[in-house]
Length: 324
Image (tube, rainbow, N blue to C red; front, top):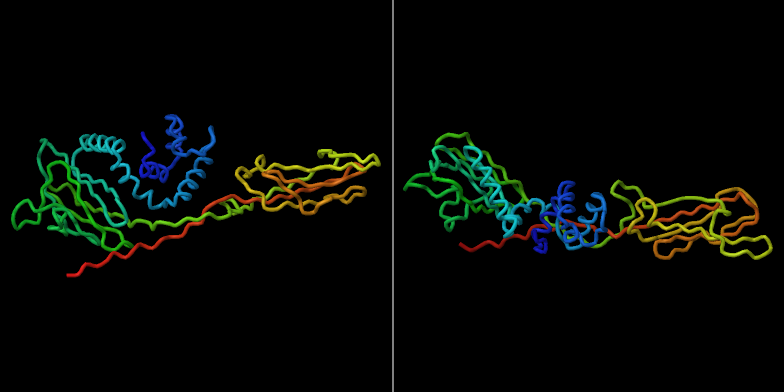
C-alpha cells in the first residue's frame, strides 16, 4: 500500500491499534507511516509518535477517525480492496444491508446492498423518515426519498443489487436519522449517522507531565565517593561531578531539561555541594561537589518537559445561504 497519499495515511493513523501496528511492522510500512519512530519501538511508543505526527500536521484525530472509511474508499488501492470485501460479504448472506461513508462534516455516502434468491429479484424501498438531511442525487429531485420513484406517483424506489446514495447534513451539530421499510418485508431499517467531531487547531506546547498527570521529574542520590572524580587538590579535598542522563531514566526519552537541583542529603561534615542550582547540557544534568570524609550523600533532582501539542476545536464555518 502506498502511504504517501496523505488522506489514506492519516486515515490509518487515526484508527491505530495493536493490530495495525503489528501489520505495519510485518509489512515494513511502519517507517513510511511514522518516519521518526525508532526501529523496534514498542506499540506504546508508536501510539505516542502517531499522535505527535497528526498534531504536528494539524490533523484532527476524531475527525480523521470518523472519515477514515471514506478516505480509504476513495483511494485507488484501498478502495478496490474494500469494494471486494463488501461484495463478498453481501454475497455470503441474504437481505438488505447498508454501509456509511462519512465524506466530511456535511456530506455522507450511504451504500445500500441487496441480495435475494432467486438472483436479480429487486426490492422496493420506501423512505419513512430522513431527519436532519436531504438526498442530493438526481439534482435533488427526491430530497426526502433515498431512491427515485420506480413508478409515477409512487414513493417506493427499486434496488436490484447496490446503490450509492449522496446525503447532505442540514445541522452539523446533530445526527442524521433514517427509517425505511421494504417490499418484500425484510425488517425495517433504522440508520443513525453520528455528527462529525469538530476539527482542531494544534500548536506546539510544553508537556511537563505524562498522560496520567505525573510530573516529568527524577530524583536520586549517591555517596560522594561513588561519583565521578574530577580532581584531587592534594590536601584531602576530592571534587566530584554527579551526572544523570534523562534519556536513560523512565519517561526521559525526547525530554528537554528544564531545571536541576542539587543538595547534600546527609547530615555529615566535610562534604558540600558546590552548586544548589545544577547545570545541564543536552540530556545530561550535573551537580558538583567536594568531600573529605566518606559517608556523605548528594541528591540530584531534574525536571524536564517534552514538546507536545495543545489543540482547540475549530467551529464549523457557517454555510452561506442562497437567495431564493
